Length: 169
Image: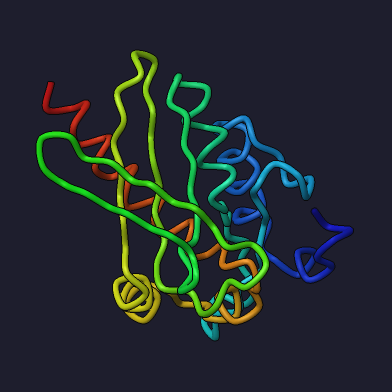
C-alpha cells in the first residue's frame, strides 16, 4: 500500500492502524487486487489521514463469502435492455459491445444460496445524484472510464436492500 501511494507515509499512525484493522476484519488486503485501497486524505486540522476505500469488487467478494453472488453491469444506449417489475421481475440485457453509445444506467443483481434473485436498476440521473450528494472525492468518478463507480453505487444500493430484507425475516 505504501509503495503504491507514497503519501500514506505522511498519514497519522492511528489512521494507518485503523485502515489495517478494517482491512483485516474484512479479510481484504490493500494489494491492488482485492478491491480495497488505503487513500490519504488531507485535512487542515489533522493533516493527512488514511481512509479505507472499498470498490464494488470487494463488496462482491465479501458477499460471496456469505453465499450471495453479485453481478453489476452498465446499460448503454445501443444495448437491448428489458426491465420488468411485478410478480415476476426480470432483467434482460444484450450488450452491443461494438457500438455502445452513451451510458444510460446501471444495474446489480444478487443471487442467494437458494437461487432467489434481487435486483437494483438505476438511471444515469439517480447515479449522478448520489455522486453529487455523497461523494467527497469526485476524482474517483472522473478517472473512471469503465464506470466502476456506477457499478459500486448500484451494488451498495442493492446491499442496503438485501441487508434490510434479511433483517426483516
